[in-house]
Length: 266
Image (cartoon, rainbow, N blue to C red; front, side, top):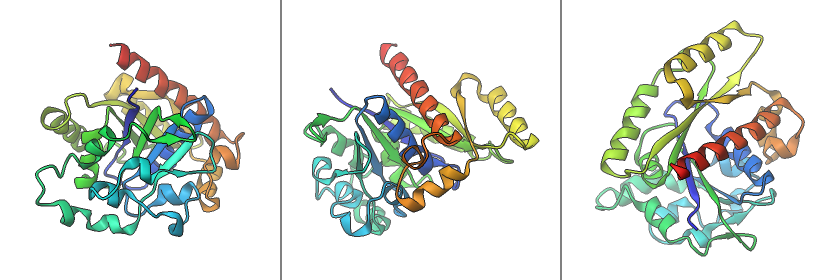
């Protein structure tokens, strides 16, 4: 059975894409899913946040997109049971030049996923793939969208939160019409919510008014533990399971699974 492929995308930086990728993956694994995180950001923050050191990144997403390796060969086991990682390195900065003249340059990830039947986490097949994108709508993000079933859009509860969302949604529609007809936005994840700040409430209300049911009920709070955990190479759910951020991602995981099942049944 083919895993569900979810891309986390937002061309704005600092909105919580990587934090969401590693903690949502951990939360999904906690309820029995086997999750592969694919890091397509040259900065490699998701890889670092999952405790994958630079020297342990032998085969990266660069080799995958360059057609030099298969996903099954690149999966690195993490400290989280049920979560594997295809890490990123700075080499990925050069991939656009490497494949710029290739007719299939937008489909490199999609073809890699089509050839991952034997990829495993432990001895079990992968059920979810989460792709962590760079903060731009470049060829790496286009590959991630062309390969995905759904898009998750992390958005911070701050002024200008909606800035750029229309561009992202327009890009998703363009990818859907030209490269990937199954693609859809599964939902918008509101992050960095501060209940002490009236602006957070106003932004949340504005986004819910404009985007309706696309916005998940679960809101990710601004939380010190979420910020600290990556420096220890751990998702927050391992660093401090009881903190508000960890609990929010557990709730988000149930929403994501429910929406995926609804979409599959539609």
